[in-house]
Image (cartoon, rainbow, N blue to C red; front, side, top):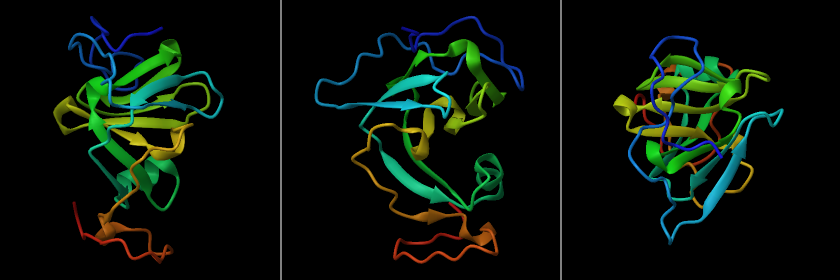
Length: 161
């Protein structure tokens, strides 16, 4: 198993490398369910605790471009609670260690984004195999949403974050 304790890889755009912080054991909380996630082709797999802190649908231009969709449905969690279980050599990271989009280098699936100075990951909900207990609670960055997309649910909407 590839541990969340990854060391010695350099920060550089468009590289395969360190995504998870070296913070000791990544053993799941005894009270937390562990979810599986993967890319489309199955070359990259990960595990993440079902202990997400927040979830949203992001309509910013970067998330739309990253997903090729009207928005990115994501859930946020502390970085050390996500563990790569297979496919480290297949990762494609766009950005730096503390701010990036992480994809499968074989099929291009967006798996997660490292955010908030590297402390958290935004897991792309579409990459989860198992259903999380959290659901998106709001739409963010609707001020820059795709003009062709209409939000039809009753979730709160924020012009920015």
